[in-house]
Image (tube, rainbow, N blue to C red):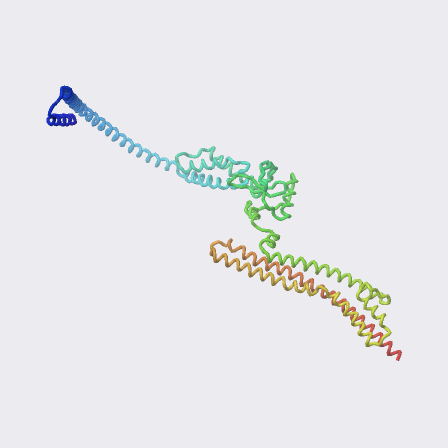
Length: 458
């Protein structure tokens, strides 16, 4: 309405300023004035209606407030009554609990024992190999332990008997060897059904191989690495036998030792993998040296046998053995003077010495170099160890295990090569020395015999 007033004032002002107003303009102003008056009338009516509605609501609000107060008083009375009833019930519960404790007496200790036995049995059953055949007994143990722990309900006689039965059955199964069918996960990841033999609660065997039971996944898998042959052979005999007594290896730790076999390297893996490059060099050198020494020893045995055979027939020398060649030199030069014959015989013996002493020096060098290479590997391994300590500290021993392992393995390999090569070199040198002594002795004897004959002839 204020806007209309402003518009009227503006129009009147404009009319006063205008020198003349036409008839049409006057009609428009009258119409505008009528609209303004009608707006004032409508606004007045609306305000009056609002005031009447406010008066009516004012009376209703008082009634609503009185109703709300009455409801609040009623609810407060109910709340007070419920509080008293709750306190009374709580007192009754405390009295009943006290009566229950007094009534239980020594049974309270019994139920405590039942709770402990059920909890311990659940842990034992979950880790036991018998859990494969009786997988649901752990749920009963858990429910019984929770019931005894809450104290809201007592164990029934049937539940106590069930607990006793399960414990007794576990004790009985500990001393049994049983067969059953179950799925076995092979090393390649496939699963096949196999006839499994359970040896008490210690080991599982199938097709002569030891198995592993995973408690978390409840699966049976074949060990990636089997124990020694003597244990595997016992497992094979057990798999093929239906009754009787069969010696078989048991793991008293219920599979923990067998599981660790996967992480234990064999002697071949220790020597070839952990020894590093130096280890391979020592192994190759040892194989070469031992092979050459053995072949040389066999050759010297053959030569020694030929020399012994020739000694039994000195009158008919043969060029196929050292002694025969020395005797041929004597027969070819026996008519010359003694000094020349002695030189000829000495030359013939010296001609045979290199053949008899061949490769002795090589084997001796290998026996000396092998432990030196082992020492080199030890130094390299210790360097690797100290580098790991510098980078990662000493918190994790596994970080240092690689260098220490290389140091020890190379030392062991060097000694393993040096010790047999020393013995083989001694055998080779002894054989060649004995044959050379025979040649020198025979040559000296023939020279002495020729000297006696010349003295007699003079």
